[in-house]
Amino acid sequence: MAVYLHEEDLPGDVFAPGAAIAVDTETMGLITPRDRLCLVQLSDGGGDEHLVRFSPGSDYAAPVLKSVLADPARLKLYHFGRFDIAAIRHYLNVVAAPVYCTKTASRLVRTYTDRHGLKELVRELLGQDISKQQQSSDWGGPVLSDAQRDYAASDVRFLHRLKDELDRRLAREGRTALAQACFDFLPARAELDLAGWPEVDIFAHV
Ligand code: MN
Image 1 (cartoon, rainbow, N blue to C red):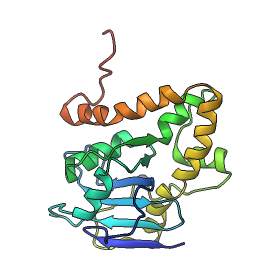
Image 2: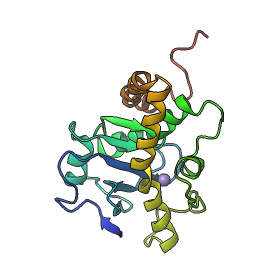
Image 3: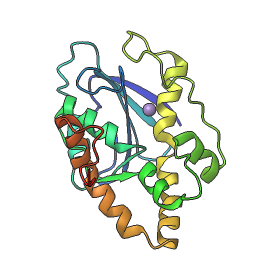
């Protein structure tokens, strides 16, 4: 169980072929074209987390990371994938699909609450407590603090286990196929965000 920090790309052969990978990103803010991608976190659910850091002025070449993210045989697990998929598409120029989003799944089964944050989901479904204290910290500095590393790693640490539990609940409520259709749409939703329809429901009547 360790957290590995890499600069500008993943080393080769970190993940077994075809394994589902949990993915999260940290950026300078919420406006993707303005706020650069600083960190991509990945985990195969086996207990280790890998953080790939990008420096200011990076060319985002990252061939190994891109091949993992773009691999059509590898499921990518996100919490609020809409944001991460857009950031990855904009900065790394790959579509990081196929997709599973624990926030979308949560909305489809936890209809008894409007609390779908990662912290709340981990607490209710897995009985564990994660800190969100570093969420709004400066991810662009030359050194990541231990607290930032821990926080960044914890954002991908639980997604495989959340998926298992959410899949059970989706099946129980008869919403597995609907969830899959939502996941499949997420790359297009991210593309709409980047193309200028960020806060518009394109299916809305008015
Ligand atoms: Mn995060």
